[in-house]
Length: 245
Ligand SMILES: [Zn+2]
Image 1 (cartoon, rainbow, N blue to C red):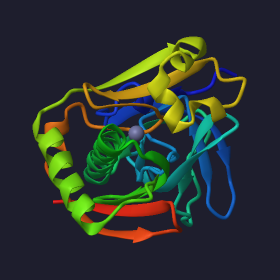
Image 2 (cartoon, protein in one colour):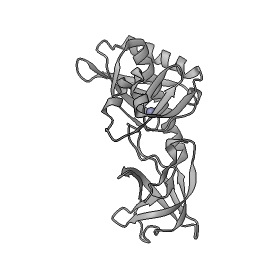
Image 3 (tube, protein in one colour):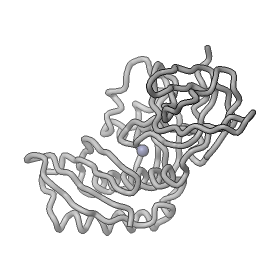
Image 4 (cartoon, rainbow, N blue to C red):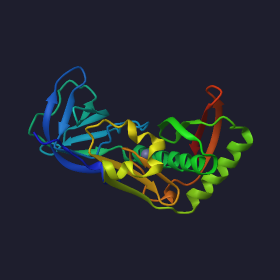
Protein backbone atom coordinates (compact mmCIF):
# COMPACT_ATOMS: atom_id res chain seq x y z
CA UNK A 1 0.00 0.00 0.00
CA UNK A 2 1.32 3.47 -0.88
CA UNK A 3 1.77 5.58 2.22
CA UNK A 4 -0.70 8.42 2.69
CA UNK A 5 0.25 11.88 1.50
CA UNK A 6 1.73 13.95 4.33
CA UNK A 7 0.80 17.41 3.16
CA UNK A 8 2.12 19.41 6.14
CA UNK A 9 5.68 18.55 5.06
CA UNK A 10 5.37 20.71 1.96
CA UNK A 11 2.52 23.13 2.78
CA UNK A 12 2.26 24.12 6.43
CA UNK A 13 -0.68 26.42 5.65
CA UNK A 14 -3.11 23.71 4.54
CA UNK A 15 -5.83 23.64 7.20
CA UNK A 16 -8.11 20.92 5.80
CA UNK A 17 -8.28 18.35 3.05
CA UNK A 18 -10.71 15.73 1.73
CA UNK A 19 -9.45 12.20 2.34
CA UNK A 20 -10.43 8.54 2.45
CA UNK A 21 -10.11 6.29 5.47
CA UNK A 22 -7.63 3.52 4.62
CA UNK A 23 -7.17 1.81 7.99
CA UNK A 24 -8.94 1.78 11.35
CA UNK A 25 -7.80 0.19 14.59
CA UNK A 26 -10.77 -0.05 16.93
CA UNK A 27 -9.38 0.13 20.43
CA UNK A 28 -9.79 2.07 23.64
CA UNK A 29 -8.79 5.12 21.60
CA UNK A 30 -9.53 4.42 17.91
CA UNK A 31 -6.66 4.97 15.45
CA UNK A 32 -7.33 6.10 11.89
CA UNK A 33 -5.04 6.27 8.83
CA UNK A 34 -6.10 8.39 5.84
CA UNK A 35 -4.88 8.45 2.23
CA UNK A 36 -3.83 12.07 2.85
CA UNK A 37 -3.71 14.38 5.81
CA UNK A 38 -2.80 17.90 6.90
CA UNK A 39 -1.86 16.71 10.40
CA UNK A 40 1.67 17.05 11.75
CA UNK A 41 2.37 13.87 13.76
CA UNK A 42 4.72 15.51 16.29
CA UNK A 43 8.49 15.31 16.48
CA UNK A 44 11.54 17.53 16.73
CA UNK A 45 10.08 19.20 19.81
CA UNK A 46 6.84 20.21 18.10
CA UNK A 47 3.69 18.58 19.53
CA UNK A 48 1.25 16.74 17.26
CA UNK A 49 -1.77 18.58 15.88
CA UNK A 50 -5.32 18.31 17.10
CA UNK A 51 -8.50 18.73 15.10
CA UNK A 52 -11.51 16.97 13.62
CA UNK A 53 -12.42 14.29 11.13
CA UNK A 54 -15.83 14.92 9.48
CA UNK A 55 -17.59 12.22 7.48
CA UNK A 56 -18.88 13.57 4.18
CA UNK A 57 -21.91 11.23 3.92
CA UNK A 58 -23.65 12.15 7.19
CA UNK A 59 -21.68 15.06 8.67
CA UNK A 60 -20.68 13.06 11.73
CA UNK A 61 -17.48 14.27 13.31
CA UNK A 62 -14.75 12.89 15.55
CA UNK A 63 -12.25 14.78 17.65
CA UNK A 64 -8.64 13.92 16.83
CA UNK A 65 -6.88 14.35 20.15
CA UNK A 66 -3.37 13.61 18.92
CA UNK A 67 -1.43 12.04 16.07
CA UNK A 68 1.82 10.19 15.68
CA UNK A 69 3.90 8.41 13.11
CA UNK A 70 3.87 4.62 13.04
CA UNK A 71 5.55 2.54 10.31
CA UNK A 72 5.88 5.65 8.17
CA UNK A 73 2.15 6.50 8.34
CA UNK A 74 0.51 9.38 10.20
CA UNK A 75 -1.96 7.83 12.64
CA UNK A 76 -4.83 9.97 13.99
CA UNK A 77 -5.92 9.09 17.52
CA UNK A 78 -9.61 9.79 18.10
CA UNK A 79 -11.42 10.72 21.28
CA UNK A 80 -13.33 7.51 22.12
CA UNK A 81 -17.13 7.70 21.76
CA UNK A 82 -20.07 5.29 22.03
CA UNK A 83 -20.82 5.10 18.31
CA UNK A 84 -17.37 3.92 17.26
CA UNK A 85 -14.92 5.25 14.68
CA UNK A 86 -15.43 5.80 10.93
CA UNK A 87 -15.03 2.80 8.63
CA UNK A 88 -12.43 1.96 6.01
CA UNK A 89 -13.52 3.52 2.72
CA UNK A 90 -15.42 6.44 4.33
CA UNK A 91 -14.86 9.81 2.67
CA UNK A 92 -14.01 12.45 5.24
CA UNK A 93 -12.63 15.94 5.66
CA UNK A 94 -9.70 16.25 8.02
CA UNK A 95 -9.61 19.65 9.66
CA UNK A 96 -6.87 21.08 11.90
CA UNK A 97 -7.27 23.07 15.09
CA UNK A 98 -5.76 25.90 13.08
CA UNK A 99 -5.36 28.52 15.81
CA UNK A 100 -3.27 26.07 17.81
CA UNK A 101 -1.21 24.95 14.81
CA UNK A 102 -0.50 28.50 13.64
CA UNK A 103 0.70 29.40 17.15
CA UNK A 104 2.96 26.33 17.06
CA UNK A 105 4.32 27.41 13.65
CA UNK A 106 5.12 30.86 15.05
CA UNK A 107 6.68 29.37 18.19
CA UNK A 108 8.73 26.88 16.17
CA UNK A 109 10.00 29.59 13.82
CA UNK A 110 10.94 31.74 16.84
CA UNK A 111 13.06 28.85 18.13
CA UNK A 112 14.92 28.73 14.80
CA UNK A 113 15.60 32.46 15.06
CA UNK A 114 16.91 31.96 18.61
CA UNK A 115 19.05 29.05 17.50
CA UNK A 116 20.38 31.04 14.52
CA UNK A 117 21.32 34.05 16.64
CA UNK A 118 22.99 31.99 19.38
CA UNK A 119 25.01 30.08 16.80
CA UNK A 120 25.98 33.10 14.69
CA UNK A 121 26.83 35.47 17.56
CA UNK A 122 28.11 33.08 20.26
CA UNK A 123 29.00 29.86 18.41
CA UNK A 124 26.87 27.77 20.78
CA UNK A 125 25.43 24.44 19.64
CA UNK A 126 21.85 23.40 20.30
CA UNK A 127 21.44 20.19 22.26
CA UNK A 128 17.66 20.00 22.47
CA UNK A 129 14.40 21.88 22.54
CA UNK A 130 10.71 21.60 23.15
CA UNK A 131 7.63 23.75 22.63
CA UNK A 132 4.00 24.25 23.53
CA UNK A 133 1.77 26.71 21.67
CA UNK A 134 3.27 30.12 22.51
CA UNK A 135 6.11 28.97 24.79
CA UNK A 136 9.32 27.05 24.22
CA UNK A 137 12.68 26.16 25.64
CA UNK A 138 15.98 25.42 23.99
CA UNK A 139 19.17 23.95 25.42
CA UNK A 140 22.64 25.02 24.32
CA UNK A 141 26.26 24.17 25.01
CA UNK A 142 26.80 27.69 26.21
CA UNK A 143 29.13 27.86 29.18
CA UNK A 144 29.31 31.65 29.50
CA UNK A 145 25.58 32.39 29.34
CA UNK A 146 24.42 35.11 31.75
CA UNK A 147 21.47 37.42 32.39
CA UNK A 148 23.12 40.20 30.40
CA UNK A 149 23.72 37.89 27.48
CA UNK A 150 20.14 36.61 27.36
CA UNK A 151 18.84 40.21 27.34
CA UNK A 152 21.14 40.88 24.40
CA UNK A 153 19.97 37.67 22.70
CA UNK A 154 16.31 38.64 23.14
CA UNK A 155 16.93 42.03 21.51
CA UNK A 156 18.87 40.49 18.61
CA UNK A 157 16.26 37.80 17.98
CA UNK A 158 13.55 40.47 17.85
CA UNK A 159 15.58 42.52 15.38
CA UNK A 160 15.98 39.44 13.17
CA UNK A 161 12.28 38.59 13.34
CA UNK A 162 11.35 42.17 12.44
CA UNK A 163 13.68 41.99 9.42
CA UNK A 164 10.91 40.06 7.59
CA UNK A 165 13.14 37.19 6.58
CA UNK A 166 11.60 34.51 4.36
CA UNK A 167 11.45 30.97 5.72
CA UNK A 168 12.03 28.30 3.07
CA UNK A 169 11.50 24.54 3.01
CA UNK A 170 13.86 22.48 0.85
CA UNK A 171 14.15 18.75 0.30
CA UNK A 172 17.72 17.78 -0.61
CA UNK A 173 19.40 14.51 -1.53
CA UNK A 174 21.28 13.22 1.52
CA UNK A 175 24.76 13.79 0.03
CA UNK A 176 23.94 17.39 -0.81
CA UNK A 177 22.60 18.04 2.69
CA UNK A 178 25.73 16.57 4.26
CA UNK A 179 27.85 18.96 2.19
CA UNK A 180 26.32 21.97 4.01
CA UNK A 181 28.69 22.58 6.95
CA UNK A 182 26.10 24.38 9.07
CA UNK A 183 23.73 21.43 9.03
CA UNK A 184 26.16 19.32 11.04
CA UNK A 185 25.47 21.34 14.17
CA UNK A 186 21.88 20.12 14.12
CA UNK A 187 23.22 16.59 14.06
CA UNK A 188 22.09 15.72 10.55
CA UNK A 189 24.78 13.02 10.77
CA UNK A 190 22.64 11.20 13.32
CA UNK A 191 19.87 10.63 10.78
CA UNK A 192 19.33 6.95 9.98
CA UNK A 193 21.22 5.50 7.01
CA UNK A 194 18.07 4.68 5.07
CA UNK A 195 16.89 8.27 4.76
CA UNK A 196 17.72 9.40 1.22
CA UNK A 197 16.24 12.87 1.33
CA UNK A 198 16.75 15.52 3.97
CA UNK A 199 14.23 18.27 4.57
CA UNK A 200 15.76 21.58 5.54
CA UNK A 201 14.28 24.78 6.93
CA UNK A 202 16.07 28.01 6.10
CA UNK A 203 15.45 31.41 7.63
CA UNK A 204 17.10 33.19 4.76
CA UNK A 205 20.30 34.86 5.94
CA UNK A 206 20.03 33.57 9.51
CA UNK A 207 19.50 29.87 10.10
CA UNK A 208 19.55 26.56 8.24
CA UNK A 209 18.60 23.26 9.85
CA UNK A 210 17.53 19.74 9.00
CA UNK A 211 14.00 19.66 10.36
CA UNK A 212 10.64 17.96 10.02
CA UNK A 213 8.30 20.47 11.65
CA UNK A 214 5.96 23.23 10.48
CA UNK A 215 6.95 26.91 10.32
CA UNK A 216 5.55 30.24 9.15
CA UNK A 217 6.65 31.57 5.75
CA UNK A 218 8.15 34.84 6.97
CA UNK A 219 9.59 35.91 10.32
CA UNK A 220 7.18 38.89 10.48
CA UNK A 221 4.40 36.37 11.23
CA UNK A 222 6.15 35.42 14.47
CA UNK A 223 5.96 38.95 15.87
CA UNK A 224 8.27 39.45 18.85
CA UNK A 225 9.45 37.13 21.60
CA UNK A 226 10.35 37.53 25.25
CA UNK A 227 13.01 35.54 27.05
CA UNK A 228 11.08 34.35 30.11
CA UNK A 229 13.94 32.60 31.87
CA UNK A 230 17.23 30.83 31.66
CA UNK A 231 18.78 28.17 33.79
CA UNK A 232 21.86 26.08 34.15
CA UNK A 233 21.58 22.37 33.37
CA UNK A 234 25.21 21.79 34.28
CA UNK A 235 28.48 23.64 33.79
CA UNK A 236 28.14 23.77 30.00
CA UNK A 237 24.50 23.05 29.24
CA UNK A 238 22.17 26.04 29.60
CA UNK A 239 18.48 26.40 28.92
CA UNK A 240 16.72 29.48 27.54
CA UNK A 241 12.94 29.81 27.82
CA UNK A 242 10.98 32.04 25.46
CA UNK A 243 7.37 33.08 24.87
CA UNK A 244 5.65 34.81 21.99
CA UNK A 245 5.10 38.43 23.04
ZN1 LIG B 1 11.87 23.61 12.79
